[in-house]
Image (tube, rainbow, N blue to C red; front, side):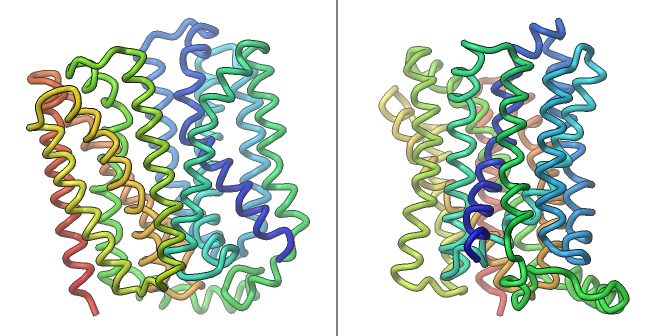
Length: 393
């Protein structure tokens, strides 16, 4: 497994880059293509919409042909999409680049989560929180890197340089020995006829299992919390009397706290040997903490309270997604991991696509602070799903 772990880390960093890239280049891209905010929003929406069917279908492909072809193909497609986006001279070409980028990102994310559980070893809670720590590092450094590149290079050259970096996971995957993962379902597929015979009952069993749907509900209601906090933290802090520069710095502090909490959770889970039952309890505890923090956002007063709640949100939110993934992957056999992750993301993404929109509409009529009432409702629903998870045998 000499190359498997570096390949997994490189893929996680590329995945983190994926969630931060469009936000990092949107101003430069809008200026280059003379786009208004509506068209910029259309590109960002296209990324989310294209991801849903791709990540679901890639789950089937991964379970049928193995992880190696998906990582190689996803890495190459990621590089191609960045070249297309960097070379785009029209909105239509930029849209093609974003759709290709979304497809590549979805392919890599689908395969890297189950692969991380094998590459890092230890408990699922340890491996998934460690994986999401690397993912968070990728998301955090991307805006900083883009900013530095754009000071020295054109947008096209900056994205072409990132395209070269995006080939690293593909190159490592091409040279990695995936046979070391075969015993856990991560290697090459068995003959197609055998897989086809096994796939139907496996999929039926997957879709009947309440753990799949409770984990999916957890992600559906967790995703909007992360999206809303990332989108409205600076506005919320500004309304509480925090200066623009300080508010921007505190948003970065939120992401740092959020990322660090995953590393701390991974190390703690490994040190104490967190059991599957306690993984579910951790989701419940974080859900309750999210309700408390968001209540502080809505009803808290003063600048100090606002700053404290933003930092506390990072601590509360960070471990939720990786621990949901730990429960999911620990519950299902490796032969179903691709499809399980595909369903989780495809359905869970609906919450991120709809709840922040409702929150934004309510905030427009009232205030950003009051808009977080909808986020509280989402956190309560997440907590309810966690209670149901704890009650499952």
